[in-house]
Length: 142
Image 1 (tube, rainbow, N blue to C red):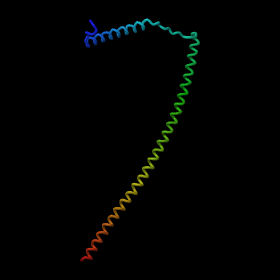
Image 2: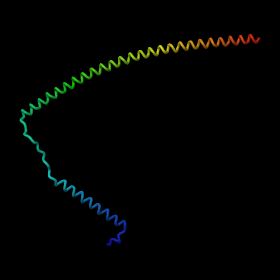
Image 3: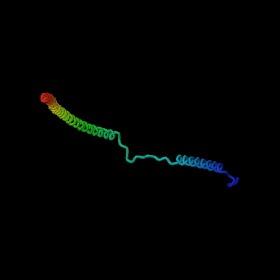
Image 4: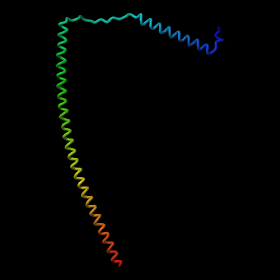
């Protein structure tokens, strides 16, 4: 088979087959290198301690942890009491503020009601005066 006689589809098929073979070969090469690597060992520097020393160290750490947790608990209780006091103070101030606001609103409402009543009375007087003026004009024309 001569290269000039190969059609485009046949060339594409051969290129695809070659790429597949290369991909399979690369995967096999990666798997082989992963499996042949040397396994590394982990070592710890220093000497192992005696069980008594370890237990002593463990007890010291437990004591330190207990002290830290006691301090944290104390700080937490202190913060909680301060926050509770502040919240109570803010609630009291808010309640007092609302009472004052309602008193002011009530006073304004009373003033508005008084003005409304005065406006109604003024309208009634104006209507009465208008009807009196109309009667006077009618009497003058008669």
